[in-house]
Length: 305
Image (cartoon, rainbow, N blue to C red):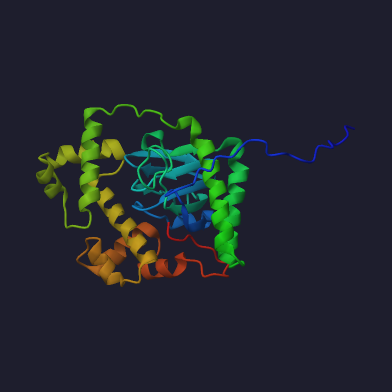
């Protein structure tokens, strides 16, 4: 039987160059745990304008819409959403996904736009491979300490966040600077349609009014957009509105009626119907169930994702 090694000490021999200096001072905004059973109530299409979101897929698989195309995600994947990247988590009883999520603001990485951790063209989905266990442990410790209200939890988790960001940069390093495949003409048009909906989804727009604004026939507009994204323009508009409503429900104290108006609905009852259909519970129940009260470690829900 081989004898155990007596090597028990590792020296740090290299000079360490700090990554986060000057104005590049990341701030931990939220940490979430999404259990597989909770993914039946998905966080619908949304974007974060002032934060980077990091998601570690721990179990299950699905097909998410990220930016302008649907992408298969599976256990072991790391998802990196720079600020402003629209993403749609498609899940349900037949495709449950378990994951952790961390939101980080205050990033000013050299050569990148504010709140971009990696180049925009580097992609969004990265297999973690041999780094998975260590990354999961970091996500897990952060959520557990914040949810339990441990002493100095914010300070402790902010330090863990720095370690997590370095781990993310390590996993994504091979893709940094990768060039996107040039898009063909229909895909470029599809992106224009997406940009139009993203800018105007809170307004009373229709397929007809989109076509008129972009000088395209509604039929061709719908065909091109569905070919690119997998959604019809009307489906994308609906999910964009519901996703923004989720953000307002969990980050503000606005009434459901006011939120319905803000995301483009004249009727709060119709908004309630559409929200329940797409999320799996009414808006008020979603707001109540979503955020963890400090110390309620036994009923974790996702925070501010």
